[in-house]
Amino acid sequence: MKSGIFIAFTAAGAAVSSVTALSFPRAAEGQGFIAMPVRQVRPDYSHLSKREAIEVTLKNQQFYYSTDISIGTPAQQVTILLDTGSSELWVNPDCSTAPSAAQAKECSSAGMYNPSRSRTPAVGPIGARRLFYGDASDPNTQTSAEIAYYVDTITMGAGAIVNQTFGVVTKSDGISTGIMGLAPDLKAGYEKGKPYSLILNTLADQDVIGSRAFSLDLRHATSDSGALIYGGLDKGKFIGELLQVPMVNGMKGEPRLAAELSSVGMTLPNQPTKFYDISAADTNVMLDSGTTLTRLHPALARPILADLKAVSDNNGYWIADCSYRTPSLANGGSDSYMSFTFGKKTIRVPFSDFILDMGPSDGQCYVGLVVTTDQQILGDSMMQAGYFVFDWDNKAIHMAQAANCGKEEIIAITNGENAVPSGIVGLCNGPATPDGSVAPAPGASSPSATGNTMPASSPTSAAATGGGGSPTTTGTTTAAPTAAEPSSSSSSDSHNAAPSLLGSDQVFMGLFMSILAILATTAAF
Image (cartoon, rainbow, N blue to C red; front, side, top):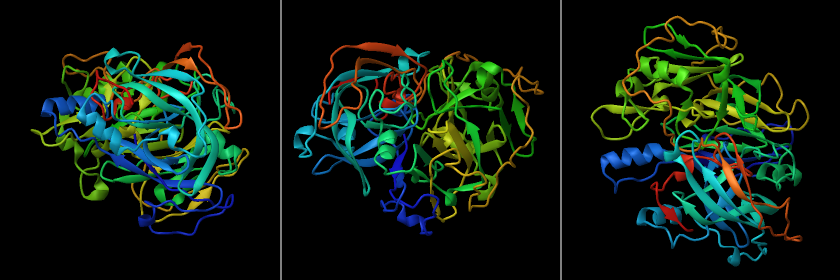
């Protein structure tokens, strides 16, 4: 997951004076939003063999995005994964019981929170829950974590929220880094205070931000950092107009940060763009920063893999020639990319992002796409190319082609129907598909988009790289406990939902949780 945060507050609707991009690694103060740098983290698998490293990297994550927060008094800093596929925040309290030196190292490097060391004081434990992560269609991707709930002060840069409920891990299977979930609760949806006040709700309720909205800029694979802005957006990080599309529920009807996909295309050098058939059953996609790979249904994924001449590695992943990763035309290379269209907005994903270089090899790379029969997910292999604004209150997603032209102009998101004003145009120039470009509608025939011969052993279900699992949880949480009103709970419930990193009520998130850990191990943190 990608993380990095930059905090600032500006008056509603007012723009912050431009500063250089070099200022982003530090939190800054303003009024109405919190902007923080998001760092790209690549796990260290140097202690593994080449084959083991590739398998662990793909099953967990080749990279993820993280950000720093501080909890309690005095502040205890922890690094957490940024996840738009789940809703809960949880952290690690102790790394001494990690089952391997590698997991202990990753856990320690992320920092820890010990409730007994906080003078706020911390309240808890006030309930417990077991969270399950992974793709419901692939048992090999599934992991879990057991958490106890506490209440304490959380600081992000110069902004702080009090009486915030979050989880502290008591036991985990294949998970060594905490998570910041930014999606709605799978059961309660966008409702405030249920099952307790989620981070985005609290930020708005305590007037730190103007409304329940945030923007996310993950940056391309060649960049080390991006930005997460609670309650704001940065005009200096995208090309063209920021267009709105409806935020829809997941394929099983549960609340998600999802949208309807209008078309998918592939452009290769000196060839016209080829569009792929999308049936009505394949339009629903979740935008999940906690999943490295994109996960699509067989009818959509297989023709794409065939056109890339991808070969199965017999583990659910697909190998393609690294020459596809030639830099984009803007960088002196060939103009090769995937295109994902939502209504009138098309996001171009260069193959340098969509095809993953796993390090020193014999010219083999992995396609950032796997097959699933469960919830479709657009993971980091797609999201790196887009700039996204998620507006909970208006159930809308605003998107544009991502870019970094060395400028910053942060605008605070207000409240009401036009919290994110229409007509916002980015300050950057560069290649982008014109808005409203014609592409085949879902279900329409697209010449030669189907009928291609797939490589042998094409799976109907494949492992993911993180996140994307149908979240389930057991246990209970109480509604909005505060430091003044501690509560506890011991009953349990269980829910099944479509994939997402961590859902506050049903977390079946997937591999993303496995991030830096080796699968099939159990750690008690």
